[in-house]
Length: 481
Image (cartoon, rainbow, N blue to C red; front, side):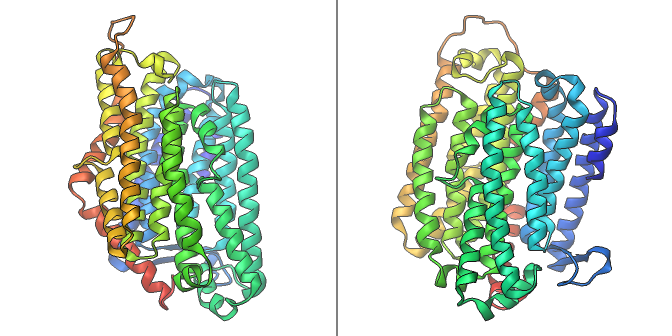
């Protein structure tokens, strides 16, 4: 947040971008260091102002949110270098100090949600991140960016209000806002209607923030009309943080016994995840704007994550956490490739893709590689998380879910193939080469490389996800979250 204040005071031009990039790289160093300590020590705890929890605000890091914080920092460190030339072509230079201040505020909100151990603090950081996001979406060059931002503001405010009401009801029943303390006190009042109502408000509010079907209507326009680098950062981090909040409240604050025993969580989340996964994949096939196509694809991919959460098993939760990390890599690479095309042509309509396989070979190769990961082809991260999801479904004997995952992947083949066909099999009117600059290609290919690296060497991602899932279940059995 201090970095955002400094960015707002810098003169317009390249300086705010360079400052924001330096901040993102320091953030990656700090997140990697803390993640390593969390893996060694189990849980890190910091008390704000020296006030001991549950009275004071606690920041708490375990393998689950260490993975999320590392993901946010990694994506920011890759996307910010891309943002310089990309946003310079899409946003007037005079707005650059406020643009990068908003980007850093967005990242501060996301990191705050990831590391806080206080339920009310989650709401505060949600709003910091959301207010910055409304601004960033509204900076898109299409005038419809303003209506997309306003729509997101309305839906986001409704979601935040639901979440705040739920937290308020929990405070009324337990007298605490510390999530570890809530987990200890909720079982004493779990049978009351107030706690049941609080659970419903929190789950619905968070599901609106994470764009679970049918609460996803704000997302397609927001992703389509936001500046390219902003879309890549939002798609890779914002919904993932909301998924983490859902996991944290279901598994550690309320606990699986309450969430899956007293409340109809499985009956609610699993059907919505399945319908969302299939229906939005079908809608994606018919989109003429490729950014919009990937936006609907993101709603479908959220279905995979929620499906893993709804399985209420260690393997299912491992698959959900893996897909949170892996989907951020694959969707980040795809949106950065689209950012390269928007830089050259100012549009991402499918008509502009004719012959791009020869005109922009490196950009289209990056898009195809990201598409293979999205489909779930072996040696990519998409295959790893879908493999774990299928394994979790088989473990539970949910064979129809296996079919749903396979059908969802086949639908992804169709909408990715539409782009490949136009780019490689249809001729372009202008055959001259117009490849994106190296400054845009390099970050794009870094994410493409990570898609294959973590698709081949899964020790880090699978190791952290398995340990986090085990910890979330063990804390639910009696330990402190």
